[in-house]
Length: 128
Length: 456
Image 1 (spheres, one colour):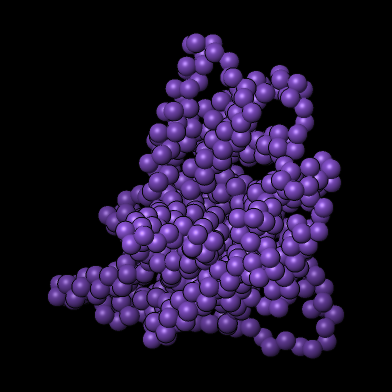
Image 2 (image 1 turned 180 degrees about the vertical axis):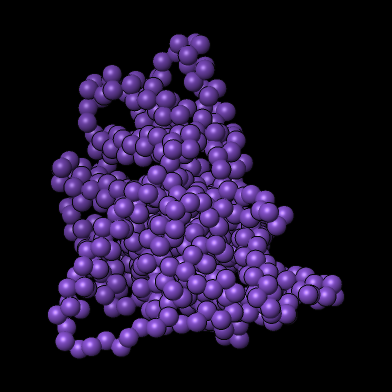
């Protein structure tokens, strides 16, 4: 499913912050987690995640550090800061408000929606 | 199982991909390393699932997104890296040379228009060198509307922004020409000096072209202002040399060109050069790598040493500041210089970099400047009642307070950053948010001071 660009941009901050609130992580693993959580429905173009991470870092919501991964390569890990947690709580409130409003209107809407089926994750070997 | 030959081919492909990324100005080598780690992990996962290396490479690269889209996203986040580059117009490569030619024509046309504006009042009997008050009050109105116009054209601003700018400039022209100034009075001189500062904000709005609301947009305008100043100084230097040669060679044939210089070359050159300098900053950003930050690096340690030496001398000798007429203005200018050093080091700094020795130096500079200014203010405050509240002194004092507030809060933010409490972006935000304050004060001096002090 194609999710609009604006919606992607708006939702990327809470999604990334929430994933980092689960524990420190790095780009590739974050994208994997997003696919997993959305059952393959949210598919970010991989490269686009990094400017988002850098913006959050500049705003002080997350911190980065370089570490040597088990593969022997240097890898940039991100960690959520206390400012980031506060931001996440704030975003959560906003999204819950939007979500509640949408749920209300969906339930009163008579038009049936087409059922959503998860798209297969073919070349992503880890699957979901 | 992959063949060793396949691995060699893969390494070659990754090398090539890395090369393409490196050519993008917005993506720096640390980012390339981060993206490469991602690409390799993706390839490894795909290969584990049974894809051959070359297939895995293709899929992984595709997932990364197109290079253009990727570097556009990086550019949006890291606009500071692109300041040197010409990326504002995403035109195709073929168009750019024709576009650059047209831009040069527009810039030179506007520069000629500025020169014509300066000379036009002569037609109505207001001659340069005689109607000094008129030219002092209006000189910024001959140039800045054209400079703003250049950016309106370049950024393609809509009629709403355009009409706002027109309103601002017309209002400014009405104020300085309709208020009944006493000829040669302080308020007239102050209005002439402060009007360009107030109108510079209007130029900034045109320059930012809709990005004024963003920190990055305002920061770009600060960068632009610094580079413009440097280009202008260079052009003025060249103009001085040119004039010296002109005078000398015409003297050799017994012709006096001083009149031509004073009433034509100087006014027309000085106004037209503003537009030309702005065009140069826009067009040739990559030719001189940001000069302002380079000069900042050079002079920050020198000014820090100067101020510390000054404070140590004051402390050791116990000499009080001799409060002369211009001492307040001198300290205002000192704070302006310190603010400039701070602004241009902030503008060139990578916000993600950890605190370094240069940051400590900045804090030393800020602290010593604040203490020196406090010493000067203390000396002035003790005697200001004896001097009386003239418009000049009130203006100078107001500016001192505005600069002091800015620098003091900057110091707090900088110290917070050094101790790892605050991100560097806070300092950037504070500096860019503060810009309208200068313009507001300058507008106040232009509009409110004349009636307040009886137009004298």
